Image (cartoon, rainbow over all chains, first blue to last red; front, side, top):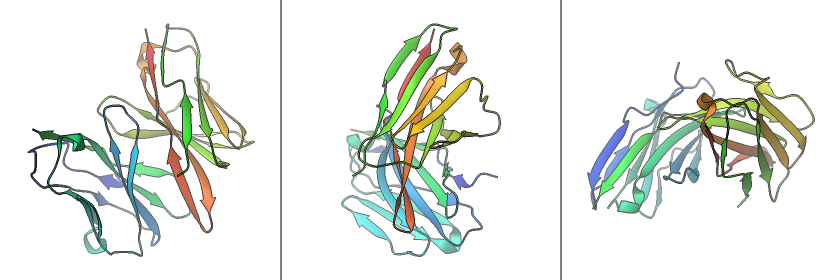
Length: 114
Length: 117
């Protein structure tokens, strides 16, 4: 079973629009970590955020915000006032405590149209 | 922040030849390194887990004789694609893990794009 599901394969928005990327995860561990990475066309993974399972506080960093809801096993990512430079593939990932492996979602390709 | 490098960043090789990709942790010792493969417009798939001084653990479906992994030191792991074929063309990403107190941190390399002609 897929541990991390990103249902949105591709999203296109017009510049300055807000956009939310969905991520749903599955784990039986009580301790785990959730991540978001940005992958621009160059291919390098850019770390955006790490959240541990005990911290459900939402986080805001500039135009980026994350909504972590354990009740729905979701860790959604919102970009406000999107910009062309936000165009990339975004991956959500899960790491379970006791294991070292990252489980990546299938990614959401975001295109911001000027 | 911690840096992981990969060399080369791009490589083109002929079918039947072997190519080696290096993954280095530049400012920390990595007890464990991971190798991922990413096909175009696809997610990252874990190929193998490499622990320093021991044999790598391969994921199901990954040919260990084709993808040779060596983790000879705490800062270097290598992936050798032997007798490469066009279907081995892909983006290979490594990551290196180090402990941070009671937790672990994992850092990703910039990736190596392999094209087999």
